[in-house]
Image (cartoon, rainbow, N blue to C red; front, top):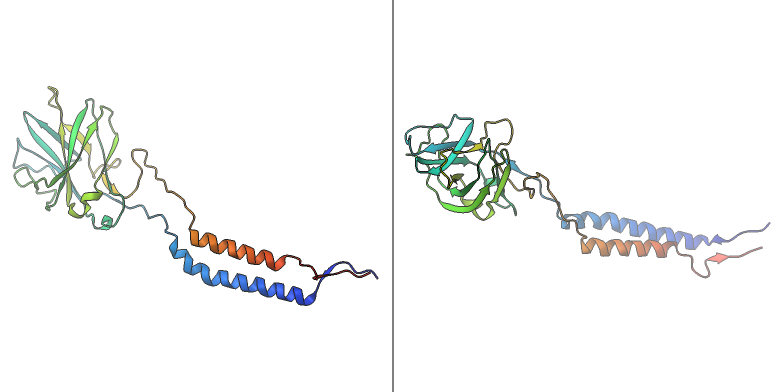
Length: 239
């Protein structure tokens, strides 16, 4: 009876041992290498614990119970919007942005955004007791399109953030204040986040190859390939 080409039993046993050894190494080393691959940070979002606005024309009045907050710097007075946060969760975040949405609006404004580093309460703060403005972190142009989401980076000031203050400027003759959606509204509340998305709310991440994992994977493939490769002298031809 003719016999076709077959693997030598001892060669087959050695080949299996090499494969088992390579697979065992993979199971041992892989868990040690996985922590070297940084995962995308979880997206954190925090809404204000307090928000309010104060008005220089009524310096002893508290507006903390209002559903909207207003801001303006005009001849008739100054309104400042305040948003208080607990920012401790963002101290080590590489990206931290403050997001806010304008309410009903039909004019364009320029707003100054400030960091405040003293505490206050939304149901007691007034113009007379308002927190002082610590440092201005940016200026944002506001279009006349209502319910538009805006953002500004606060990463460089996150250690000092107790609250964020907004002062709007309108250079025309209008006496209309800029309306900003507050935390008490159902939609479009202000918040801080480590998300990289802007007005679209989308986020992105950049993928990469860990060089250590790449080398290890290539070595494993090479060992597996050599284990199964037929070599001269491993095939017996008999008739």
